[in-house]
Amino acid sequence: MTILVIAEHDNKELKSGTLHTVTAAQKIGGDIHVLVAGNNCGAVAEAAAKLAGVSVVKVAEGAALEHGLAENIAPLVVKLAAGYSHVLAPATTYGKNLLPRVAALLDVMQISEISAVEAADTFVRPIYAGNVLATVKSNDPIKVITVRTTAFDAVGPGGSADIEKVDGGADAGLSRFDGAELTVSDRPELASARIVVSGGRALGSAEQFQAVIEPLADKLGAAVGASRAAVDAGYAPNDYQVGQTGKVVAPQLYVAVGISGAIQHLAGMKDSKVIVAINKDEEAPIFQVADYGLVGDLFSVVPELIQALGD
Amino acid sequence: MKVIVAVKRVVDFNVKVRPKTDGSDVELANAKMSMNPFDEIAVEEAVRLKEAGKVTEIVAVSMGVKACEETLRTALAMGADRAVHVETDAVLEPLAVAKLLKAVAEKEQPQLLILGKQAIDDDANQVGQMTAALLGWAQGTFASKVGLSSENVQVMREVDGGLETVTLNLPAVVTTDLRLNEPRFVKLPNIMAAKKKPLDKLTTADLGVDVTPRLTLVNVAEPAKRQAGVKVANVAELVAKLKSEAKVL
Image 1 (cartoon, rainbow over the protein chains, first blue to last red):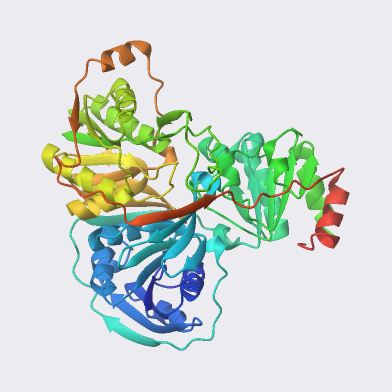
Image 2: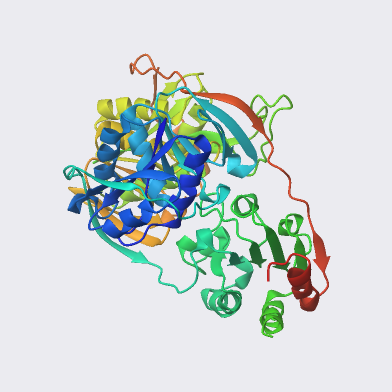
């Protein structure tokens, strides 16, 4: 068995989701190859080659691959896939966009967002917003899988894989990348942060969200998240959303501020190691999953907390 | 320009789903069913494009049991012009749905297919991308803004780092994210009018698609329950517990 892991990167750095996906590949067992498809992405290939357990890194470069357009990368993966038993990608927006296109072209049924490996053909995946775990067995010749990154540890260094060049193929001529507005922040990445501070609708405005949540996050060295209600109301950008349809996080410490705890939000954070909830409604469902609940007005509790952490 | 919107009948988002006692599948008997919320956003977007004069006809498509007719009637009440129901009692996996949608698209020849980015039952997030692949069309997934012209469609996408914009040649597939729009409430006269709109029936055999599942459901189970912890009286107690008990600070 040889497994192909599709690396996620920005042509400069390997994204952390790839490290968790390699661990999932190790659980399946077999030789692990990594595909780095991009442009001028040699540094990414070198980083991938150092991951423990990776034996070969395949690098495909070309202008058509620079921005991760699925229309151009999927045919490349399909061409390579014949030699593999499994094709894996992180269940990030990158992997979710790309991999079903690969699966359909291979005529196989993708297994989305696995949270555990039972056997080389059998996997566990959350359905119904994480209220149910389904164990599914694939009868397809090639298993095409996206991996819930929080369910697997990041693989460490220690590898020295061979780096091989492969032909990147032509531009499919279907789509064009126009640009991106990426959130610039010195804070840790939300999906992999050790501590996450999230704000909900109770913050009341974008200004108050910034004035209350961000100083606490800075004090804790935490990433900032938000509930869907806060994002829908425009208090926080879309990429902050934690939940079933946003990001799934599992930090060491998750601080939910003014978040009631709708099922779809819990689906995105209930695997956190320690959960703290601050909410003025003592009946809020968030308290049912919180290790430590503090009933109170967030506008006075959070500044107090920042002060208490100060020394 | 003709647009297809694909809609799925799913368990209503307010229903808390549990496994059956034998773990063979989830318990759905008597559960309230609704249109997948992301597909509602897709219908709304198509209707807005029609209201803006950019789209001339909206065809709503659904696959599945007879009751999917209700979901299609909702789409018609929201503003779709006609409906196509591929009726089957078979369990349909995303790959099978994509093949059926491809076949319908080949009959209907739309310039745009809009559908939700994922269904809230199986959370698979596959059908849009798979259909685009099978048709050889471009895909704009997780859309938060759609700008349609006669030659192409510009899609602003919600991605992990923020937002990204792509331009797709037509025909294309667009899958909707939460912030694309807020679907309208359907008014009673529109529900009545929807009953008179055409709803055509097809079978998987008509479309020549083999829908045999590729995955076997081994079992379903409830995830480990998280126990509620303690309430702390004040900030000082919280910080003390986080430091000495939880040891996360």
